[in-house]
Image (cartoon, rainbow, N blue to C red; front, side, top):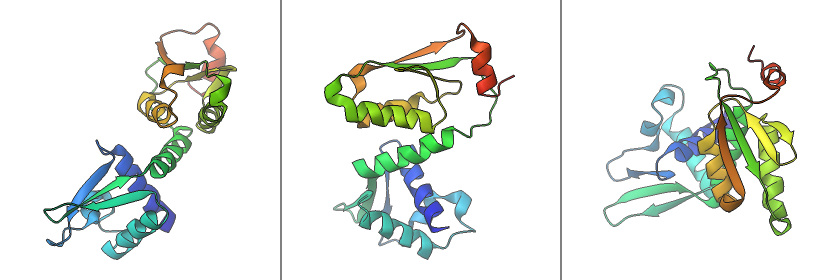
Length: 180
């Protein structure tokens, strides 16, 4: 359960507009209010422990503002962990397909090999189909996740996104993604 609390907090921060949220410690406002769907399942103490663990692992940072509020936000390491969780969850998506293909093409130079390998690894872990060595296809909307990863890896100028209605030989892809 502890890991799921940590994952849930990381994903909440990732889903936040600025990758963070704030609370007022003096008014007894606690973080669990940001997780309405867990209010009855997770005690504020466990939530507090999860935040403490994330802070120890340097996945989040907390900054106290002059007005007594505390800003909790993701570090770069925390963002990468949240994206890893998000990419793992992409593989198991079960939703109605909009009949559009998301195509990610990249031509990343050798000096950025680590980033290229990291990108390719995340695509494969999420279940993207490797159409060619530097061309991956996915049937569901994932542009936000890919854009965040590409930005984190500092590969924006090397990665292109295409939204397509048709791919030659797409029956193979439909079978692969169980879209028939």
